[in-house]
Image 1 (cartoon, rainbow, N blue to C red):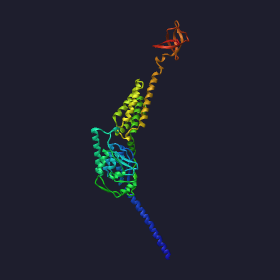
Image 2: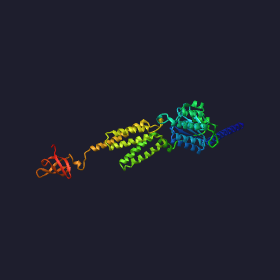
Image 3: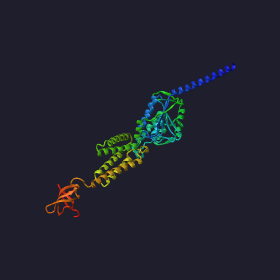
Image 4: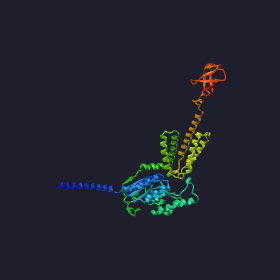
Length: 442
């Protein structure tokens, strides 16, 4: 009896443990579901209008989803100043905390990336990364000279000081990154108080900032609870991908060439429709891309001059002079088209050389077709009768040919020498509806 009682007590105790375990599991699952998520954006390209829209969208989405933190995983060589300022303004005005994390190892926050990192509520870097080198330079990589250099340098330096002052970071270092183009690794950046921490990955970053208090632009203070928080990676929308793609100068260059080719075909062969449609769309996309890129208009004019030279070669016999001039103008224009020293904003020679060569070959082929067409003998009209062979089919008078069969047609003809029926003759001239002929071999 006592043994049965012990068995019942033991079974009840085990059942209680199972129920308590299930309740604890359910509690933790419910708590995890209630923990606000952390949104993660990946920016691993040059800063462009597409990047600006992506980050702005990420901030809006983080607000909509009531995320407790937005992490921008950054690896950029720099980019456009206008887009950088838009991103900094969006981060300053965000209603959720924003962390910029320069990662993974080997990544950099150069030039524009420096300002974006310093503008964040939390600035972090992964081991083996670097930040800095934010000096303004002119196209071709040369230093800006004279008053323009002073103006550009002071403007960017003031921007750097304003960003660092707003976020409480090292103002002197920020200005040095502009004026002296200094760049430091993650350890030195932490020592110089350019960033807040070094983290191996996003998980380590979230553990490090757990419990940190962030003051937002609205004046509200938010305490982060990021330990174990669910992470959501926010992908770019199709629009943002297209904008980023169009910001690539190589894509803009190819679209511009496609636009010129398409419109040329349509104007040469009215009614083709497809080349004109493709050309118009390509040209409009190219114009949009060039609008957001630092374009050198001298390069653009040189490319236009090259097209004019190619077209004139079809109409004017220059023995290849216009084609050679067009090749030179297009090559120089292509190299000069983007006014920036940064490699990521330059058109690659691997794109320029095939494009120029293909364009030149295309127009040379057209010119060759024109020359061949000029050398082809006429096959209709009075010109087409010259030097044609015929046979005397009938005579009148004193042996003067009255009728000659040429190309299966009977013509009245005259000759300065006596001929016989059946003689082979050659047409030397056409006078109205009468031929002038002579004996072949005569």
